[in-house]
Image 1: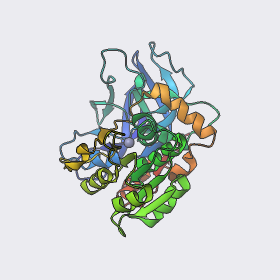
Image 2: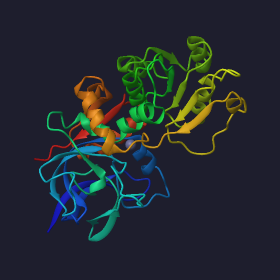
Image 3: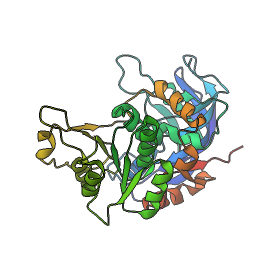
Length: 354
Ligand SMILES: [Zn+2]
């Protein structure tokens, strides 16, 4: 049996997304059919939308929540009728696999393949792309756990493995940067210094746990970071992905001390383009640089932790989501607002389908 649903489709580069009907078949053995509750709108989709070489048609979105309507015969970690989170990182791949298998959908009479997607009222997904969502938490704001939280908070908690008292600087308070701040706070990092060019976003960062904020338009931020910390931070996070943010994060990391201790670490979270220039003195001070890819950890292991931290009041999802749209038809407006820098943290779409 097949079902019809609506999805946002990048049909042609340079044109607005279409919201059109697609057809989904019953789940294969290792697939689940999910009816979506909500989805986040993430910068990665802007990169996809603006990539002239990206494949078309493409279904988009990679974090969300929903309920499993049907599950294939080999799916054991979730059952029909169970609530789930959808995340862009495979939850727990079997040995030897490096990616989850893709699923199929039909649009305009032609069959296409998709990986994960959440900008759709229903989605046919490989079972790797969902993790159970407990019954006692909301289904809307939890939609951002599947990318913003695992990427941002995960960079702090699982890539950097921050310890209480580590000093931290975070460059950029977008959806991911806001979550780096939240993760650093959960870890007990202190101070948590946040750099952005937007005063509104700096005020927002304080609500999330920043102990100090610096407007990078007023001062050379690394100088201010060094002054606050007596020479630089243990960990600096680039949560933007442009050259200036990279260079300033690198410059904010403390040097090692000869014969005494190693230098600090720059953690590159933001996705950018082009090469990154590296100041020679950075490695000479025995500093390190690491990338963070989806927050390092396996979703099956850590997504339940984020739900617990939310329940304990330590992960303020209600603040990390600052805007809610109520219909998939608003997707192009949501994309525009994110692009224009109007969104603090994350915006989400809450589906109104019965
Ligand atoms: Zn994302």
